[in-house]
Length: 217
Image (tube, rainbow, N blue to C red; front, side, top):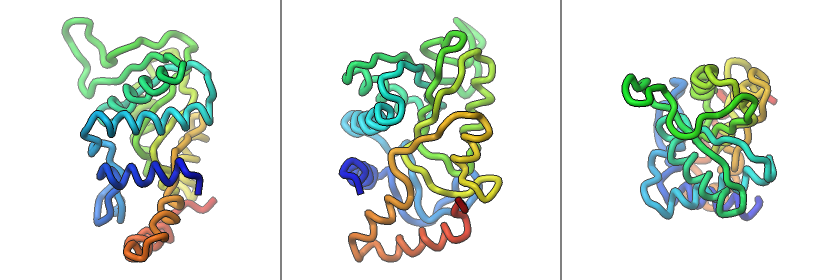
């Protein structure tokens, strides 16, 4: 496993972002582990998260300038931290996010921050994709803009099937015509956990879950 992937998983676990137990995903599935960017609570943690996203951004997109979009609510601090991390590495990009409820006073509207112009490229930054529900909601929100989505970046590819036997990430990419990238995937997490015998139960639960809900690719 690449060093940065190990460091990222260690970071997720130490920050309480990666948890094991019994959870219900937005898709309604009962899942044995949970990735929650909402558990990022300190300046140092959000700074580190942004740096990992920025590393993935440069690896996949290079120095191409885009507009970062962070879906409310968890995507908002992610977008800000990634923008800061990219700027520190010489790429100054604008960012924006949405309100859950459209503002009917002041400047009004559903978006806050930069207003993407026609043909500009947008990069969505999210925490995870389980069934693709959140990304489809984002695409509906962004449909009022004339800009185009270039790619999506998430923390973890859960490698779960979506509406078909393909992964939700693959389905989203095919449906909308853009790639979906992740810093790590669930099999990286399994590999990391298997290095310590105390994680045996969590590893088995995740593997059993993937036997039922894992993508067939």
